[in-house]
Length: 300
Image 1 (cartoon, rainbow, N blue to C red):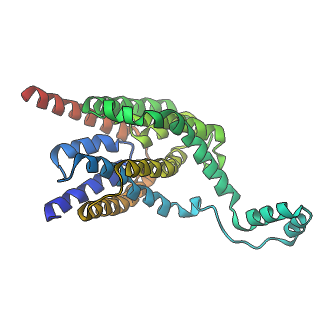
Image 2: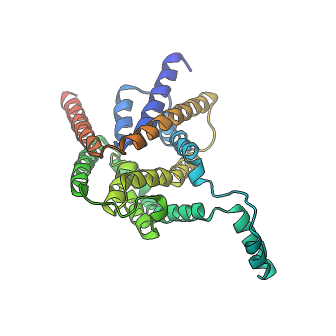
Image 3: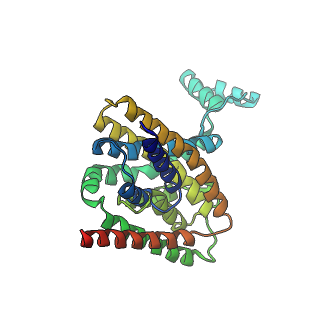
């Protein structure tokens, strides 16, 4: 791999790391970048690369939020708890000892909420994934989605102005609210929508604070992106060349580093600002995508 190809991979990793977490559509940006910068690889591998590179982005969430996500610990049980467990049947003692000593129940509950929120996507969106990729992955759909959701961000923030959020922490997030946010995540199967954008809008509408909506969106990305990457790898196979492996590794590492910076920026930004700026950015980008590709078609 020469230096030019290396720089292309690094640039794609930077774009992925920024746009995966900011609600501005990584797909829309990747289409624009791909229009001007082509990796010297097969289209099949490029399709895999654009999905698997997200693993680097999701690992950033795991690292940054490890303390909120890791559901195991080791603690010494109080004597009262030990005595209460000793009164149970033997099989129950084994289970209760394990749960009380090693399991952080609050974090397990959070993971159950994440699973519940992922169910709508698994049930509704996953079966149509190939169809959507074949028929909707084009600049017209992406541009319209960018514009529509940009307008929605502005409308939702105007509607939300003055409202007090009912849920201000992940502990306050109910299973019903998690499921409703998951329903909004289904909308992100349409290219250009932005997974983070749709779930953040959903979170705000159902009464969560911006911080909770953003953090829960990050956590939802863990099973979704790991699942999507695994499916792509199984479909493509594992017969990568040495150069292709290097491209994947570099792309993921760059996306990981940039994602950490992007997530920290977003969480700091929303403490003082709303999402309107992202809405206007989406509208402008969507218009630019339409103008560019329509102009290119007319001049061809």
